[in-house]
Every structure is written in structure tokens, then in C-alpha cells.
Image 1 (cartoon, rainbow, N blue to C red):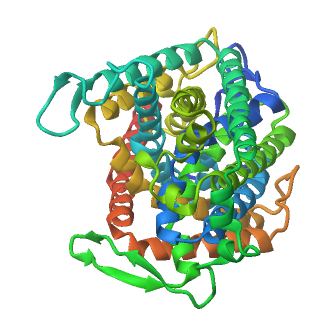
Image 2: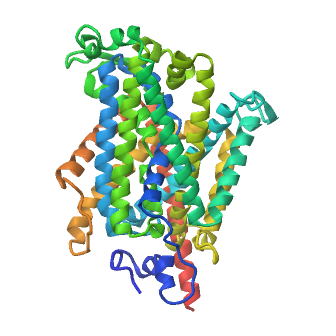
Image 3: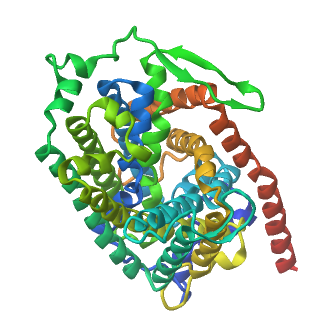
Length: 516
């Protein structure tokens, strides 16, 4: 039975391969996804995947570049606007195509199979697996606050002089990733239950930081950041003020520094705030397991992103209420939230913050592991990934092989020590894929006007168009001023083109052989 959304969009080979397990289940006893997640669980995936350790750290580097309390808040507001518009736009696509694979499917259907593959390729090689590796090692680092033997420099097996090898910190990461992967192979309800518990805990931890910040207001910080009738808050944010920005270099491109206006400097720091707010789209990967997805997916995207970004902005006001901007800029190891709690509780504040980050990173890793495996499953069903990853477990209805393959590559990245750098490289690519997906919304409105849309993007075409303009501007600024991060990301994406051609040829050959 052909999918009414994808019918006519590909050749017969891809159409035949793109049927999901949900479709198969209609014909008999084939394994199929279990719709085990309601609105609360779907929202927990949105929020839990977004909240990691970034919100507790990135404001330090952002404030160093911006040099203004007002611009720090403005940068987070820009991130909030972009993310919420993105969520509203994805809501239409999710309700229109509630299929496992989410964004991969949207790109495949709107722009063509190669764009879906390039997204899935980048997701597997770095975005999803690299994020889990980074979050897992962050868990190990903060566990070291309680157990000093857990450290990135405490080597069990060290290869060379870099960060390659097995340390107690990345061993901890591998143990956590293995445990969470195993839990998720036991069924979607167990994975969702873990996500519900830890998302609730990390939201409570963020609320605690906010509450403590308001209780521990520092008169010196308030005077420095908000004093003189809010003059200090707005200082350095005038339209005519120029800000120094370093220009990175990549193969001879860039280098040096430049003076830029506020639109450019706010765009430059979006790498930090957007990364801290990323992965909100992960719930779309699990669409086949969400109850009433045409209603719950759009709602979970809006509620989840709106709540998290409101908390993030509140956290930054707390930072400014407890620490002068100079203290935020110079927070030890950029741990701004830790510095806030130390003002309130003294040395024990560092342990309280470490405990909050342990909860946060554990829940973040679970949400990303749970959702990512569904994309590789969808790619396999299209004949564009290893065949075994396109199978569902007969008992649990989860893509067990896909989960373990994701686990294996994530562990390699943990041992390589390169995940952090790789993530820096692909943040630009992630934003490009967001732009392409929202562009696909316009394409599908034109090419498939009669496909049912239970939810239509709020503010279309103005808000989705605004997203494309704002995100494209940020991409252009990053290409100019951060070439060391942008060009490697583009190269990594483009390396997927020959891989796509190999998989496509292989899939075609298998179909021809099976028909003989």
C-alpha cells in the first residue's frame, strides 16, 4: 500500500523501500512501532533533549564577545524566536507526516532523497552521536566533583599525546551510554518513563537555580548590570556601537579581527545559544510511537521549546542579578551557574551544581539516544543504510539493531576525544538543515496542496519566511567570521554525497536481483 504522502515523489525502488513498519503491520503480524508516548512523554523528549549542560556554561563566552548585559539577553531572545518559529513550522510537517524519522522524512519528501540522506548521514556521523558522546563525557567530568578519580586526565589507556584513549571520564560515559541504550531496547514505554523522570528532575533543577538566584541577589551585581536607571544594562548595545570580533582561519581563509555592529555580533554568538537549545526536533524522529501524533507532536514542540527557552532567559537574568558582567565573563572554566550557587551556598554550591548537571546530562543523553535510532531505521527502510537497522524487535517494537549501531559509533567518538571539535564543526550544518526543512514547508504547500494538514504552521508564510531570513543571515555571518567551524561542517556534509550514491546503487542492485 503506497504512502499517500510519498506516492509519486520517488522512483519505484525508493517507494517500495519507504514503507514503514506501521504500514507492514496492517497486513499481518509484522513487528510494528508501539504508540506508547502521550503528550507528556513527547514534551519530555523535546525538553529533555534540549536541556544539557550548555545553559550553565555558554553565557560566559557569549558575554565576553557581546560585552553588554542587554545584548546577552537579546542573543537569547533571538535564539528563542528562531527556535519557537522553527517548532511552529515543524508542527505542520509532523502532523502531515507522522512517520518514524521525522526531519529526515520531511527533507526526503520536500527536496528529494539525497537531502534526507545528507541529513541522516550528518546526524549519524556527528550530530546525534557526537552530542551523546559530549554529554556522556560531561557526565563523567561532573561525577569527578564527587569522585576525583573520575577525570579526563586519569588514563587507563592513553594513545599518543592527545585525548585519544580510555580515561575514567570517558569510561564513565561509555557505561552510561551502554546502560541507557540497553534500557531503550526494552521498549518505548521504559525509555519514555526514564525520560519523563529525568526531564522533570532537570526542570526542577533549573527552577531551583532561578529561585536561588532571586533569593541571593547581589547588590553589587545589580548595580553593575542594571544600575543608573538601567543605563548600565543598555550600555554597549547602541545601534552605532562597534564590537571587536576575532575572525578564525581555515586553510588561509579569515584571520585577524574586525569591528562589527550589533546585528553581526549577536549572530556570531548564536553558536553557543543555538547549540544549548538544539535537539528540540528529536521528538519528530519518534513520530511513529506518539499517540495521536497529528495533535500531540505540534503541541509537544510548542510547549517544550517555549518552556525551555523561558527558563533559559530567566536563568540569564539570574546570572546578571548575582554576578557582575565581568564575573560572568571570567567565570572559572566558564561555569557561570556554579559561580551563582557558590555566591549563595559557598563551596557546597559547586557540588549542588554538579548534581544538577549530572541529572541534566543523563536525561539529555537518554532523549537523544532514544530518538536518533529512529532516523537510521527510516533510512534503512529507504535502502540507504544498513539493512539490519531497518528491523524492529518482535517483542518490543523498537529498532534494537539501530540503537546498538548508534551505541557503537558513539563509543568510538568517546574514545577518539574529537567529539567536541566535531560538534563545533556541524552546528553550522545543523542550522542549514533547519533552513532547508522550513524551505521544504513552502515546497510542500505548492507541490502537495491536497495532502491533509491537521495543523497548519502559525503565521505562514510570514513567520517561516522570517526564520529563513534570520537563520540565513546567521549562516552568512558564521561563514565570514567563523570559517574554522563552518567550512569543515560543510565538507563533512558533502562527504555524504558519494556515500549516498553508493547506497543508492546498492539498493537498486538488490531490488533488481530480488526481482529475477
